[in-house]
Image (cartoon, rainbow, N blue to C red; front, side, top):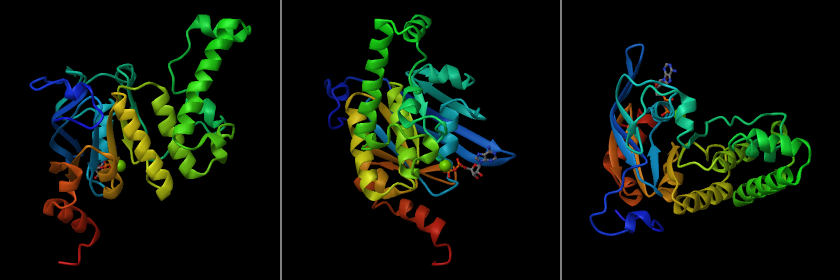
Length: 274
Ligand SMILES: Nc1ncnc2c1ncn2[C@@H]1O[C@H](COP(=O)(O)OP(=O)(O)O)[C@@H](O)[C@H]1O
Ligand SMILES: [Mg+2]
């Protein structure tokens, strides 16, 4: 496959790319109720994989397995070819994996820009001491960090909110702020759980463009949403989950025409229409 804007994948015929994420036969149950059944998918460097499905399909559960919050009952989660099932969430985030949440989790009393800065790696002791005493190297680090955080805010069109405490931010700015913070961490794999839910059409379009920009720099993205239009306009490839199972995989334009996908959605929203 040759994705638009992806140098890695277009290196030449026959070049096989190790996926950033490979999920193989993943199964999860809660109290005997199956939430995921034998789910497999892969995401390559620079690829945005859309993961759609009705509420309760298992989308967030899959993200939770990848970032180590849930331990699957069966199957494997490979990051750059390494099986990470059983690793703690902090060990997985040290592999440059970030996750955003359906409900944004910014620190309420902290300004937007400082929330973004906290997405980065903890500064080393030397940097912190230099910063504390106002030494030139500390000031330089802080200036560089701030410039990078501002760039992320501007990229998502929310820079005018930079100094406002998170608790006073409108909901859509909080949602985009989480994406800015995730990106600031310099991830290799971003797991985005419904980043456009509750966000207006114009902001969702900005987000979509920005995600494509992240992907062009090589970041792999799993984009979860139940809004199939948002996902199909953003992703390179789409996986459709329904009741814990993959019902379709394909290019966005094919997915929207797929009868199994239409059934999965209509089945969830219009049960009495048959
Ligand atoms: N921690 C949990 N405990 C019990 N059941 C859960 C838990 N997390 C998810 N589930 C169940 O797993 C199924 C899939 O949920 P979820 O992954 O949140 O769906 P989605 O994100 O697609 O809306 C649902 O039936 C949900 O109730
Ligand atoms: Mg969910």
